[in-house]
Length: 124
Length: 107
Image (cartoon, rainbow over all chains, first blue to last red):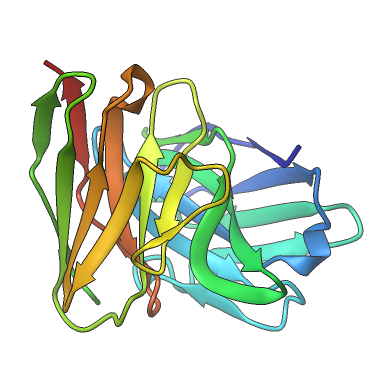
């Protein structure tokens, strides 16, 4: 069974840093691109960042470019999101997601597995 | 960025009925649209991608269609477990963008 479990969230002051982790199991992690998606309280879903299966490429939404860093450890099947210079607008539930692969074809942006999410609250 | 305009904001229906949810892209995204279901206490579920391709394991009462930049999710014969939030998302280009969501409620 495919499982994604996020950790590392909590309450943090503006301007501080935080590192989220996502432990993956039930599939060959190194074969899949992975992404973070967030959802602010009572708001919709917002794509944050993607990293390719081989770490060669990363993509970010403009509002987090330069502050967030997505990375992965394929040996340990863990996805990370380093968040620096936290702002109140970063308050959200952060979801670890997997980009789908269908018969060997990468389905860019199609998110076929989601974790339960981890809450990040930025407040003084 | 591609703006996704999703409608209606909410919808009330009874089990057995059919409903449709719409999503309009602000520019061409070809066929690259996905639909997701969100329910409390469950992880988000991919329903459809590429506009009309049913994800493995998703019941055939869910279907997707496209006309230009307009996309529709149809659920025929609602089951009690279908009530929840639905989001569309374009997967044509970065940044991937979502619609604001549609809340499907029990009438």
